Image 1 (cartoon, rainbow, N blue to C red):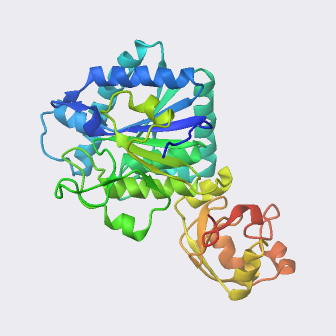
Image 2 (image 1 turned 45 degrees about the vertical axis):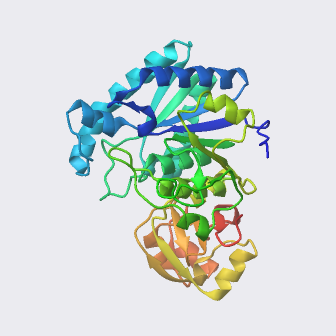
Amino acid sequence: MITNLDDIKTVVIKIGTNTLNKNGKIDDSYLKQIAAQISILKEKRITPLIVTSGAIGFGALELGITNKVTRIDLRQACAAIGQPILMNHYKEAFKSYNISIGQILITKEVLNQRKSYLNLKTAVEALLKLDVVPIFNENDNISTQEIGKVFGDNDRLSAHIASKMDADLLIILSDIDALYDKNPKVYDDATPIHFVTEVTADIMKMAKGKGSTFSTGGMLTKLKAVKIADKAGCQVILANGREENILPRIINGEEIGTHFLAKERISNKKRWIINSTPKGKLTIDEGAIEALRRHKSLLPSGVINVEGIFDHGDVISVNDCFKIITNLTSEEIKIVMGMHSSEIKKALPAKRRDDIARPEDIVDLLSTP
C-alpha cells in the first residue's frame, strides 16, 4: 500500500536523542543530512517545524555524567548547558543550506493558557512568514513535575505542537524503525506493522520497555503521542531517523516505518480544548448533561459541585464527559450554582455572563471523533 501524502502542507518532525547521538556527541553529519532533507521539503512548499530532544542528554555528557539524570534540579542544570550547545549545532548544519532557524522553548502551561497559546501561535506564524524553521523544545530550566508543567517526553510534546499548530503530519524520527507485533529485540519472527487505523488496547499492549540512558521515549510514549495527534486529525509516521533520505521518502509515499492514520480533523479551538489540562472540575445534573448534548449552553442552575481553583477563560472538566472554557471563576460558580438566570446578574459583577460556557466552548469527549 503506497501512502498518498500529496495534500500535506505542514509537517512537524520530531528528532530523538538517540538519533542525534553518535559516540556520545551530537552527530553533525547527520544534522546536515536532515537540513538537506528539510530543504527538499521546503522546495515542495511543505512547511516544516522541528521538535528536538537532546538538551538534557548532551548537557549531561558535557558535564561528564554518564548515568540517567533523574534529579529535577540536575535535569534543569543539564538542560541549561545542553540547550545552547544543541542549537548551535542545528544553526551550523542548517546554515549550509541557507536555512534560518528559531528556537522556541515552551512549557505545557503555555499551551494550556488560551492567551499564551494564541500568542505562541502568532509568533510561530511570524517566523514561518520570514521563512524561518522553528525548533521547539521543552523549557526544562523551569519545568518540574511538582508544578505539573512538563509534557513527560518530547514525543508527546511533538504531538501537542502538531495538534495546536494545525499540522497535517507528525513524523517521529527515532532509533525505533516501526511498530512491531512483538518485541523485535526478543523475538526473531517479529513483524513490522506498516499501517494502523486506530490505536486500540491491543496495540498499546505491544508497547513495552522504557527509553535508553538519556532518552525518555519508548514505544509506549510514541503511541500516547499518536493518540494526541489523532484527536487533531493529524497523521503520524514513525520511522528510523537514520534511514537515508527518510523525510523525502516519507513525503513521496514510500511504505516505510509505521503510518498511523487519523480521524476527521476538528476545529483548532476544539482541539485546543481537548488537549488542554483541566484546571478544575464541575459536577452537573442530568438535565444539564442533556442540554450540553443538544449543543446548549451550560447554565449555573445545573451545577451540583465545584472542584479546584480556576479563573474565567480556563479549561475545566465537566462530569469527566465534557471539557469547557469557563466564563466564570470557581468562586463565582460557587456563588451562583443552582441559581436561575434572573438571579445571577444580581449576584455577579456587571461584566460577567450569566452562563458558564457557550456551545462553541464545549466539547463532548464521548462524541468527538
